[in-house]
Length: 132
Image 1 (tube, one colour):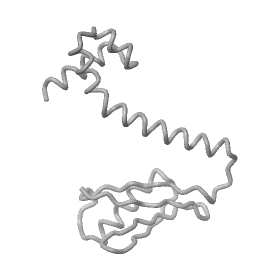
Image 2 (cartoon, rainbow, N blue to C red):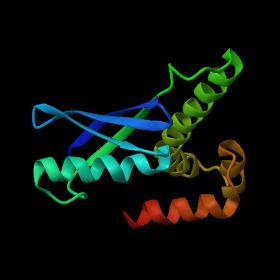
Image 3 (cartoon, rainbow, N blue to C red):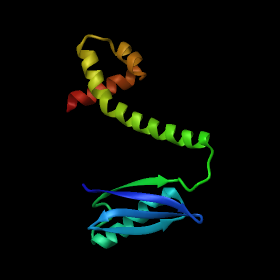
């Protein structure tokens, strides 16, 4: 599935949304709030491509360079972004870690402790991985 990169820039109380390289051109829209950006730009792209709004993905990247913030606030935003990325990486790697640790003979409770999970979550992951 194609993913369109969208830059969201704050301008005069609105988020200006620009999707890059949509059929060789840019598609623009705007939304009042950032939580509305995905649906708003998705509708605009779907209209240009003459497809349904579920036929592609969008990755909205807020650009807040023009927003006046302290260094501490900017660092807080960056740390939150990093945490989301790390959380996604952990989600992808955890089933493999559970499987290999259990195969190595560790107990469910030991695996839970190593991966900062509950024992029941380790069992769920293990059962789901076995079904695949």
